[in-house]
Amino acid sequence: MNTEIARGKRIDNGKWILGGLRESYSPLKFEYTIGSTPVEQKTICHFTRKIDKNGKKIFSDDIVRYKGDNYRIIMDKDNNFLMNGIGFEFYCGIKVEVVEMEVVGNVYDDPELQWK
Image (tube, rainbow, N blue to C red; front, side):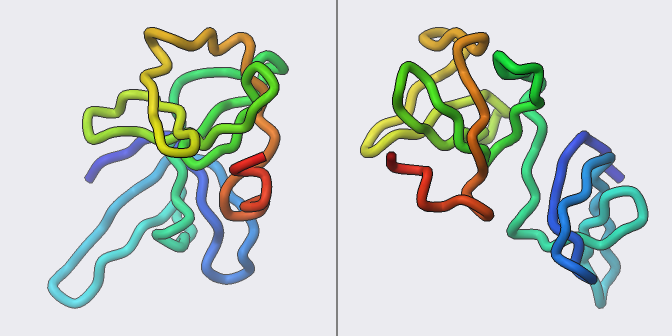
């Protein structure tokens, strides 16, 4: 069983929950939970271990404002923290000062912010 900090939308009421992500499976069932609460797999957002300029945790699938433009935060297969713009991606550890970022939403609740 793997545990990491994540957030996801609860299956029972669609509200966000934050905590330790757990994957459990049996021959008949595969389930993601945060704590003991089942969450929708497609809404799971992994904590990047980065904090924005306002002290807010940055998660995958967040939308951040950086130098006047909005970007989607993604994590690659090696858990590198990337920013995704229109037609490009760049590695945040090299080219971006996280202290200049501000979380403005996420792709699930605010999809219209992604490309503004």
